[in-house]
Structures are given as C-alpha cells and as structure tokens.
Image 1 (tube, one colour):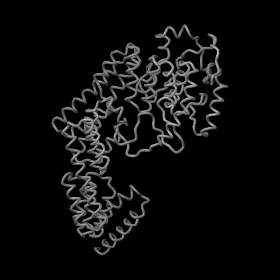
Image 2 (tube, rainbow, N blue to C red):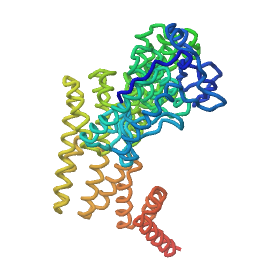
Image 3 (cartoon, one colour):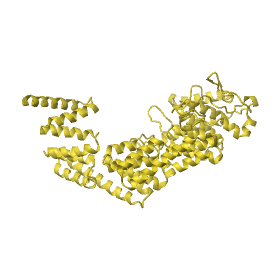
Image 4 (spheres, one colour):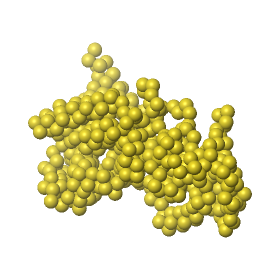
Length: 526
C-alpha cells in the first residue's frame, strides 16, 4: 500500500471482449441469447455504446487457445497483491480466502454483496434469508456473531478495496464474465460489484450483476439492478429483455410485456406470447378465487407456475390458500416451500407493506396447520406491523394466539399426568381450528392414556387425513389399533412407516409383532 503505479501504456490496456460459445443451462431454441432466462452478458454492446472506452483502451484478447490470460494490469499488481494477501492470510488463517477461479486473484467472500463463508458457517448470499418470515423462508437459521462479522468485513474489505481501486473495471467485468460462464456466480457477483464500485454509472455492469443475482436465486435484487441499468441507459435493449424475463417469472405480466417491446433486436415474439399465456392463467386464478372454486384455483395456479411465473410469491400463496381450504395441509406446506426465498426487507421494498403482509397472512395459516405455532404467531405479528388495519390479519392473530395458548396448557397438564384436563385444553384449541393435526394427535395421546382407544384412533385418523405424512399420528394409531386387536389396520400403518423410516427399531418391532399376531389369527380361523 502506498506504492504509486505508473500510468500503463496504451498497448497495455485491456478492453472488453465478447465471450464466445456461451452455453445455456436450460436448452432453448438457437438464438444469440444463450443464458438462462436470456442472461447473456453484454460485452460488445459496451463498445458500441461507450465511445470513450474505445478512445482510452486498445483490444487485447484475454483468451488464447481456451486458456485464460491474466490482464497485464493484474500482472503489474502481482507483487503487491501477493504480499498483501500473504500478510492477511497469516493474520486470519488459511480459511479466510475464497478463490474466484483457477487463475483469478483471490477475492474475499464478502466482497460486495457476499458474506464470508468459513468451515463452520453456512453461506448466505446477500438478501437471501433462511428465516421463516421471508417469502418461502426456511425454518432454521444460523446466526454469526455481529462482532466477528464486523471485524471480518473490516479486515477483508480493506484488501478488496485495495485490489479494486488498482484494476480497470473492464478487466474486472471480463473476469466476472468468465466466472459467470463457468458457473461461479458468487465470484462473478463479487467482481461485478468491484467494477461498479469503481464506475457505478456503467449500465453493463449493472445488467451483468443482475444476471449473477438471478443465477443465485435473488430475483428481486436482480430486478433492482436491471432497473438501475435502464435508468442509466434507457435504450439498453439487453437490460430491457432481461427485466422482461424477471417480471414474467414474478407474475408481473404487463411490466414484462412492456420491457419485451422495448428490447429491440433482443425481442422474440415467443416471449410476448409466453407472457400472454401467463396472463390468461392469472385471470383464471382471480376468477376462481372470486367464485371460491378452490379446486379450480389449485389447477390454475399450477398452470401459471408451469407457464413461466415460477418465482411469483403471490401465486404460491394463492395455491397454498386453496389447499388449506380443501383441507390438504401438507400439500399447502409443500407449495410454500417451493416459493423462492426473499428476505423481509427486500420483499417489503418490492411489494410494499400491504402486499407483503398479505403473503405473511397465508404463511402464518400454513404454519398453524402444520403445528408450527410460534412461527405462526411471529409471522402474523409482523403482518400486523405492516398492515395493522387489515381485518384478516387481526382475525388470524387472535386465532393463532388462542391455539398456541391451548397447546401450551395442554402440554403442561399432560406432563403433570392430568390427562382429562389436558384433553379438554386441546379441545379448546380445536374449537378455533377443528382440523389442526398437532392438537388432534395430542388429544389422541390423552385419550389413549385414559383408555379411550377408539376415540384416540378417530383423532389420529383426522390428523392423517390432512397430513398423510404425519408419522407420529400414524404410529399412535397403529399402537391403538394393536391394543384393540385390529391387526390388519395395524400392519397397514406399520408397513407405510417402514417404507418411510426403514431403520426405525420401534417400527420394525411393531410390524413384526403385528404380522405374527395376524398370522396366528389366520391360523386359528382356518
């Protein structure tokens, strides 16, 4: 640091070169656009649009015989960079670095939008959130120490800035393009971010960053970057086409068609036709919900997703709502689990507080139906903060709180051996949600303890009807049927469980005993 570098001669500078033979992940008709969802990178358009780049740089082919050639500017930096990286690695250990590719300089994982990933952590790219509160959110989370994260960012950030400020942004873009082509999307994103940090007003860098974000599943962030690219350069055809595809995936059909029409030579009549097909299915979804035709809504949401709106949270929410209405709770949970993961801040920014609150209402109801009561309360409380005047939000909140309280009291009474009172407590919760599988299964346990085996079987059957994969309820039903002596039904349940959990000793033992009893009965009958 502190070394002054001489200005490179004109013949040493590197200009952008188009990457050849780019290969699409998803096969499509032959065209000039070879990346998934038309995420082809715009190299040659940079040269056509920015005449000052032509005046300030000369063309040097960075690829020879399929091998990557390190740009001369990077070679000029190698001595200082090697020293910087070595010093930093000694201070932090060998795991502090992430290699961008076989011949790139070493870049840290949290450059730009990337978080540091060590051996005991899980990568969490930018706005992708593993909490249940986001669109399609997971139900587990790994939190890093704020102090550790801040220190790591400060240490690595200084090195990244030192690298980026000494490299030409076009060189960084070329390196990012190569990583993108090789499927190293996180590394490509870091390089595009570095290029943007140097020259934030270059539309191509924003558009390429959008492609990398899309490949990482960060659809909403990709939209924001494409919007910025078009703001910088309103007639940037490739950015319009890319944004049209993103809006189509999000179910924003009118916006999608608008940008397809402004994508110039990138336009394809099939794109607009595809958008209109999605629009037709969305209209049918709206009509089905208005008529409360839940089976029809399930069909049309499935068609909408398969036609191209595969990242539209509102469509997945409609499908989950319809599945809840038809008492298919497990399928509703599965439907929302297929929804892309968007974090709270990004979702609220894109959809607005009211729009995001509507999704959280459905999410809370799915949590309730699946027995995740605390998550349900958390989701609906967040919805209330975003849209406090929504009557449905307040109704679901009251129901979630009542069910959660009933479950808690029932559990405490059951632990104390007060089975009749526990049974009554679970019953109070079922008054608010008669088909709640967890409350039904818990009440079945109480009834089994009280010797009410037939009633216990009824509760287990009701729980399994809405959640066929609810193993605890099926195991409890098998146990009750065995005590009653209904060996055929016992064997049937154990055989299903054996397929799902073949290594479970309790299931293996129960199945063997039930089969022996059934054979003994058949022998007596004969």
